[in-house]
Image (cartoon, rainbow, N blue to C red):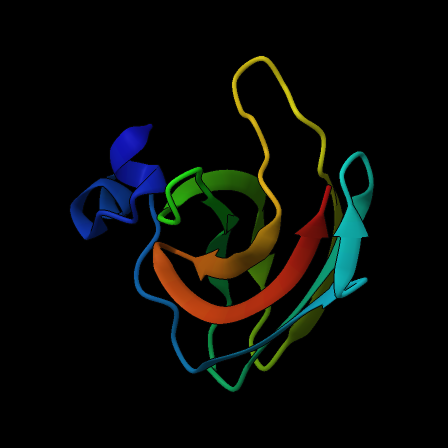
Length: 130
C-alpha cells in the first residue's frame, strides 16, 4: 500500500496503472478559510484527449502544518475509475478538519495536491483557523 500511495511507478504498474495520458486537471477547494471542526469541499475535474480509455487511481494529499513550521503530507484515497476516450469527469469530496487521536491540527495554510496514477497534477490551498 505504501509504495502505491507514494506514487511508485513500478508498484502502480503491477496493479494496472500507468502515467496518465493527455490528462488535463483542475482542482478547487471551498471555503478558502475553515474553522477547526469544519470541513472543506474538494472538486476535481479530469479531462483527456487520449483516443483510448484509461484507468485512473485518484488520491489527494493534504500537507498539514506541524508545530515547528514544517509540513507533514498525508495521502487520502479518493476513487478508482476508468476515464473514457476523450472523456471528462468531475469528482467531489468533503474533508473534515477535526482533531483525531492520530493527528493534531494546527492553524495555517494547508496545501492539497491532486494525485492521479501517482503523479501530482494540481494543487490548491486553504487556511485553517483554530
